[in-house]
Length: 90
Image (cartoon, rainbow, N blue to C red; front, side, top):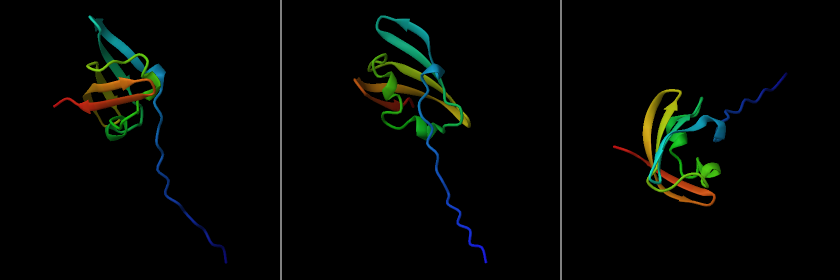
């Protein structure tokens, strides 16, 4: 008799800086675009998802996010060294 065990895994994709680009910059404001690949919108909206780009972002910046199953506009609410918080624009 052979026993087999199957475990469901949840893969969390990481932020990829090469998929982040500047669309416009003026007076300290940056409009970004991020192509998230297979990451979900919920995953990209998590705090610190963009932490690796914290040195380039500022509070008030906006990000247009293209995800596998939709798109969203996010506003950076806080950007400090190693930490970025964002919220959806409604």
